Amino acid sequence: MFKQFATLLRGRAFEAATVVTDRHALPILRQQIRDCAHAIQVSRKAVAVAMAQNEQEIKQHKRLTQQIADLETRTLDALQQDREDLARDAAETIAHLEAERDVSTQAQARFETEISRLRTVLREAETRLRQLQRGQRLATATDKTQRLQQVAPDSGLSTLREAEDTLQRLQERQSEMDATARAMTELETTGSAEHIRDKLAEAGCGKPLRSNADDVLDRLKKKTQKSNKSKSN
Image (cartoon, rainbow, N blue to C red):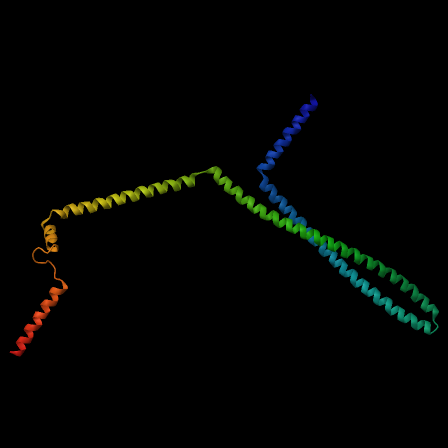
């Protein structure tokens, strides 16, 4: 029984921790990304240090090679001068320098291998970090949208629908008012004497109310003819 009770407590603790983790997933993710970015920065520094040490090793190897070449030349001169004592001392020094040179060669090989490995790991980590950062931005935007929906799930859409209904009612009312005004105007003018007169004139009954182009032209012609007769007399 005690074992089951302990298992229950551990299960409840796990579920509570899971709830807290889910509820605070974004802050946790942001901190994890900051930790990753810091680790990558440390890795960059480690690569830079390894490259600098390798450069120093290359310079050391070059210096040893030059010393060995110089001592070999001088040792040959000593042998030609039958100074075997000096040649032996030089040979011992050369042997010591060659051992250092070989160690330097091995160190360069290890540095180059490690630098290559670290660069590969660093590139992969940087790529994964950029993906995490993009995912974090998307998750943050999604979280903000979901929070807005929880606060007011459909308020924006319902307001749009209400505004559309209001506009439709307003337009229908304005159309109705325009039609009413036109009908009132027509009723006011239909039974008036002026309206009847205009309709008769348009039908050709009686003298036209307005002059047309032909009437104006005839009038001007007659005026011109009178003026010509007056001049001839």
